[in-house]
Length: 539
Image 1 (tube, rainbow, N blue to C red):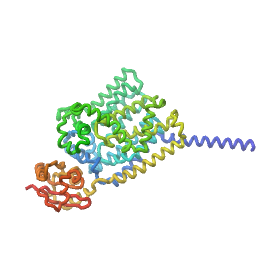
Image 2 (image 1 turned 180 degrees about the horizontal axis):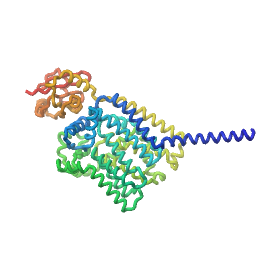
Image 3 (image 1 turned 135 degrees about the vertical axis):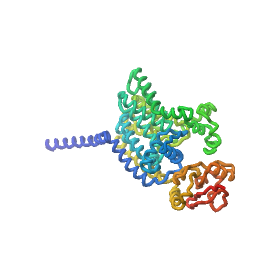
């Protein structure tokens, strides 16, 4: 081989090597681009938005119950100039729903739009936040797995506060961790968004734990004077943000922090596995009057319940929120976080991120489990699963070649996509579509003078679709008592479907309109699925 040929061969090898290096480097360059997060979020918004409005035609009887029961009536009152005080939730979401509902002309579709928009904001914020706190690679893979998570997608098209609250909480974290140096502007914005989170759902109070991050994690490496000053500013803005609502509650209800969420805690401690939710709510909930009473009625039981929920909630999160295909990596990452020396050398921003998420996890231990409550924790769990693959000092990272890492993550992404597709194909339109048929029949066949003002059922959906006020189907000792209570509450119609039959087994016979039902007159009956709309006779 001539010297010139040898030189050409060496040059070719060098170019190939550089080319390979450039290919790897370009991927990180692309995901580090300042608009990468915005592009991913925009793609998510378009795809999930189209899917949501095409396939999610009716609210379901599960997670969207609160939407029809509480948020829509509150939004309607706001448009009429009345701000009602809900015993369990803040006023911000109904206010936003009122604006979008008025603009779009339909509250249900307005709720879907708010959810899709909020989910897209979470995707964007997660990408940008984790890129700053950890690395672009961790951020990219966590964000993709988040965007494909079955539960995350489900709540992206579900009307309710879940994704809206998630977006506000995520934005709070984003602005707090946005800069490695103290910025009073970002601090004030973070505190303001934290206050808005509280005004959406009262468990947003967990974001007040940023005061502890400022004081003891010392994210910005401040002296004690500036730590105390910054923590006071955060706490003050956080409090001022929801103070107008607090004073309104004080004037109307006698308490600045008025809410009755302690009843949910009471059910978790004293009612779960002992009685149904309906039985507890109708007969026992009124006996509990404060959080203090819940805690000290049986302190030992309260503590043991919370302690037991630590394991129970985590396992449920792995199974129902994340999926065990990722859960095993979450557990491995958690073990490395606790025991591995490279992991123990946390940076202050990592410590702050972990602390905030663990604070939220701890807050949820006092209430019954639902994966929708844990929605905020999905990125945190995914960080635990993904990050060990990109810490070179870990033996795990050394053991896995880069190609194998990407193949593993690609496999997890594909599996998550398939699982999400199957799950949401089944659930996206699982609601009572028969109500759309009922609405069409009602509008065509019932004259204006015959239309009622109030309908009783187990769920509020039928009231929304028939444009009536909702009354919860009363508990009663017998049929005569049941009819008497309907008349006493001035109920015009009773809707009885398979859901009502399942939860009011003593009145299952009402699903058969051919039988004699004194006090009720059949308006219309549908066979598939069986459901009846009765008129409550006034005589």
